[in-house]
Image (cartoon, rainbow, N blue to C red; front, top):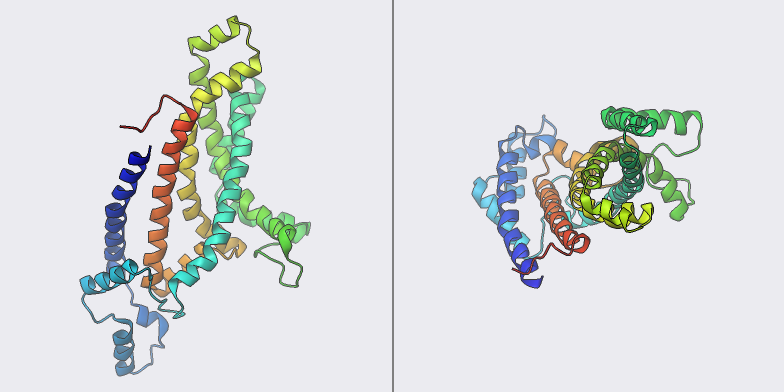
Length: 317
């Protein structure tokens, strides 16, 4: 296992470098200039040129990239063009809330989609199966921004049960209970999309396994139906299920940008939107690097979970 992990980590280095090159080229090709976003249009040209010189924008693009890469090699992500704060500090403040939101939504989605998908597969072509399949299509079809605004209108404005946004109460209070109340609505929006897609994946994976002869043999030997489903069938159906749930983590980080804007959740989604609007190149480069690292780490974690779910999967060679 260790040689496999080492090989994957070594492969990740050139992959991350290639991603940073592509991201840098795309940002340079995008219209707009960071100085134009930060300075009043009536500012004298000499001051604008001095600002560009200060930010290092007069250097050729490849020089700017290698300066950023040199800072990265020393553990520095640079300074924000808009706030002049260290980018590592900005991301460190925002990554926690985003991970909390993403994993809360993923856990809720798994908690609902897994048992419902299994139950729907074991009761194929029943009313329950048709109902869950229909609801999964509804959950997939509803735009997240529309659902988020609808939940805010009903549960925050009309009923007053939940806060409309933010992560903590501005009037004081705080604590874990207050954070969970603020987390409930945005996590629900993300979880609905997960449940809508993953119920069908779990159902389809279970249906493929339920047709196998070894389950018929297990029943013939007197195994209880619960053991047949959850010990034999589910374990063999876990590989495709792990794949689709593992691929959801990067999508959650990207999809949380819109949700964080709607619910004013103080995560990297808000930071990414602010950086895009202000053409904050150092912050955008760091955010893209973090997102790429999360994707690679998630893929590696899913591969390791394969071997835990199925002993026949080995990575010794």
